[in-house]
Length: 183
Image 1 (cartoon, rainbow, N blue to C red):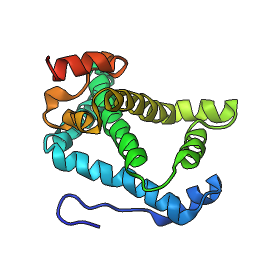
Image 2 (spheres, rainbow, N blue to C red):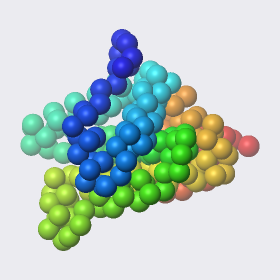
Image 3 (cartoon, rainbow, N blue to C red):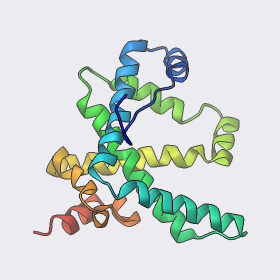
């Protein structure tokens, strides 16, 4: 769907499988997931600097790893950016959805968490735990910002690269609000 650089692709078998696994209505689940993906398209549309920032972060990380090193600061910057990207989409998908979503959110969060210790260990080894942490941490940040100043204030993160929260601000949304909305 879409045109140019802002196309969205949905892998229907994956969505169908997730809806079946979660035991939720497929059409309702697809619409809710679509809100998340459309939020990503809106983020990239609002922040033309975002794709280059992410690409640069990935290239730096891969290059360092290929050379046998690890640029922790580049990895942290990439993680913070992805936490903002995923957290904002989580906020939008829940706030914009046209129906009650609490049951969908509960089941999806439970699935992201894994079930047993072996599953948790595998997720950690594969880096899936980091992705879950990005969703949770980012959503908590944007929920706090939206509660304090509204969803519109949360969207200021995409106005310019300097508006991205720092690693510390992700855990202290008031500090981000004070910095971005100097009063």
